[in-house]
Amino acid sequence: MNSIEQNLVRIKKSLPEEITLVAVSKTKPVSDLMEAYNAGQRIFGENKIQEMTQKWEEMPKDISWHMIGHVQTNKVKYMAAYVDTIHAVDSLKLLKEINKQAAKHNRVIKCLLQIKIAKEESKFGLNEIDALDILNSEEIGTLKNVDIIGFMGMATFTEDQKQIENEFEKIYSFFEIQKSKNTKLTTLSTGMSGDYKLAIKNGSTMVRIGSSIFGIRNYN
Ligand SMILES: *Cc1c(COP(=O)(O)O)cnc(C)c1O
Image (cartoon, rainbow, N blue to C red; front, side, top):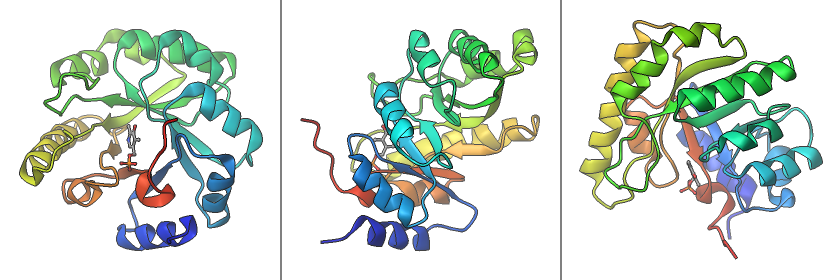
């Protein structure tokens, strides 16, 4: 059996140095996260605000917490005091609420716009035009407590490597074009356990890896 520490070391070795690793710890107990923490990991990703907040309360305070799941506007307040980065921002309304709640804590919260790249109906996210509408909106300049630092995408859940690669290529070229016009855009969050190597080949700067570090998840 592989320990969490061994998994982490193996994955880190396989990542180019400039790639940021978000250890996706959803559903896993604090003891598992502490094993990763003691092996040096400081960035953790969760997809439920309540679960993340509980872990934040229990764990050392030098951790960067990333919300990688879909966010309901009325729940932003529960993480505004501490969340570092929110990956799945998909509306101006949500951005405004994040800004409002971050301001109450005198903080700036980093945000990624989630771009829909998968074919599946169920996946959240913006199309490129809607993302540009947000980036170019007049209001964006008035939101002093959020920083849009890039984009996030999830590829289709499929065995078809070519399709996954096409989806990563598409968001990468969108990212590159926008980056050339806006120096704040530094981050492309793509790639999970099954597809992070393809993501890195296609410009990823931040990978979100769960099961390859912590083992398969049990949702019971
Ligand atoms: C769960 C999750 C991951 C990690 O998935 P693994 O396949 O376990 O690596 C990455 N990104 C998001 C948005 C997730 O919800």
